[in-house]
Length: 361
Image (cartoon, rainbow, N blue to C red; front, side, top):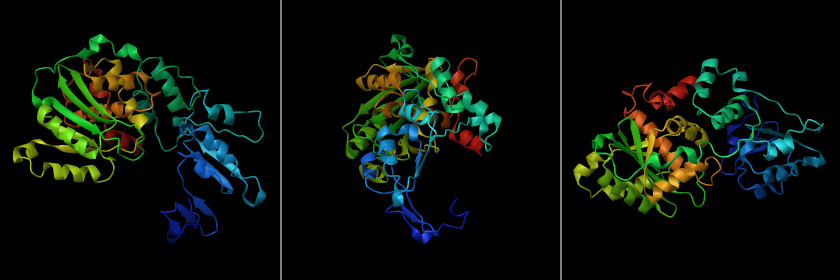
């Protein structure tokens, strides 16, 4: 927008200090809202809280106290997807009796850059049942809804979903993925999550290896162990895995390995496609609600299922994130190409990043 108004000066944008000086003398500061106390001190004219629904109320409380530049009351705007009516954005910002507040509501269909087909495409990605319907109302219609409980809940993970030993199938029906927890936005205590998956009899058999104390060397060592024992045809790694640190450690680790191992080892970078983690995890809905997963009885898989049962109200969701990556990798290697849509609804339930990007464009 600054470029359109002739106000942008590239030489005055300091990425290290996250500060841009516009040609009309206005300073624009970019910052993360993760630590609200970091905002104490400056006097500002205007603040924009983007994705305010993901922020703590403490961020709002600190922000409004900063709107005092030159002794005048400033202006705050916030853009966000409505949360529940218990969320601070509803309690604080949705007050129709307050003359100092205004709220502007828009649905996905109101977006002039999207067509109706894209709206219908997105709507189908939400799982059946009340939780999926409520989430669609919130994400697509922009409505305030109280979503009690989790997205799927324990009822989808009964004893019939568990197995002890892998089915006797070809090794080219096996893949694996890794969420390192070392990427951008990683939190203290995040898990490095390996997902091992086998396609057999129109079902996806899953084992998880979860650990929140592994360093980079240990992650690489475990990755190579899985390649030796499980022999996946492809090994997916989240693209935003923390720069080149993991790649460098991996290169050093495989230098002295036999050529046959190097040929069998097929690491593939899995991009996020520009979609937030919670939107990617939503894609698991059709697989879970149609009973297309089986889970191996291991401690790591129990951690994964616990995160699934309680999502999105969990502190860590590395397991579901790695599981969603694995389903996308399965789609890329052609697992779902021959599935009967009537017999297996997930064969057409998982949009690829290319399909989503095409719809957005």
